[in-house]
Image 1 (cartoon, rainbow, N blue to C red):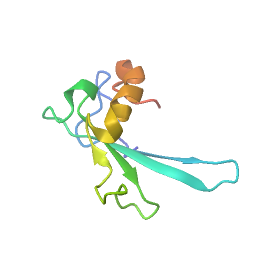
Image 2: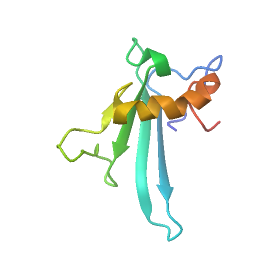
Image 3: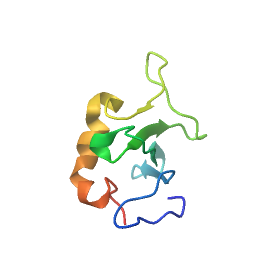
Length: 95
């Protein structure tokens, strides 16, 4: 998280949260990020944009060469759907 804290339960525009997951061997399996965009970018999920990242920080691409980033359509809506479980915390799972 880029040091932003929620104000009245909502993160400010520009907030960036990055998370990586590892397997038991300790190697990075995936790096994901979310950025608060605002302006009705993704209104059903708090205006967050989702990303899959490469270890060097670049946005990952799918098999068709398309960047893995977006709002409601990201990965078939999976990001919105999963983060919907944290809607009362502005769609963020951590504090």
